[in-house]
Length: 203
Image (cartoon, rainbow, N blue to C red; front, side, top):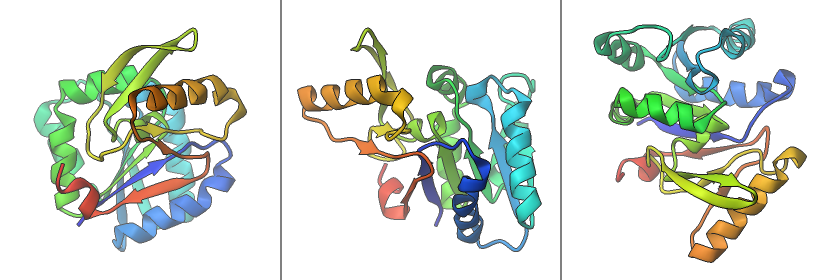
């Protein structure tokens, strides 16, 4: 069955290479078809091009984009693209924008179908957060809104956990969990957590 991979964050693509290698190995396909969603970055091409160059430059694969915002795609086209892929990667950016588009296109149900057909579903930063239960929107060190996420895994996910610039978000995350008696998953940059069938099948 498929696997979900939550990735804490990247910056230096050379340091990301080991995670890329593991993703390719998990797919178990001779020629890996990768679908990249730059949705959280408003469908900007930069991150897609970086991912395409990095993966295709090192592995026997092809990387294609799925533009939910700017692609003017039919629901049929979206469905075919997702279910034809061996691996789906959701890039980083705005969690709010990402969730708006994922809900609009009922991507949660579609991702579940992809997992059932043994696809790898990977998310980086915002892409990792969307797999969990919810996202905490904070202002002035206080949570002002809790945004429901896809709930594919029973976790609240905090990426970039060891990044210095993420200190305030880290503090808000920890305070909220403590005040409400909740558990959370903390993922450092260049680190990943893999969820197997037992984690997502019951969802």
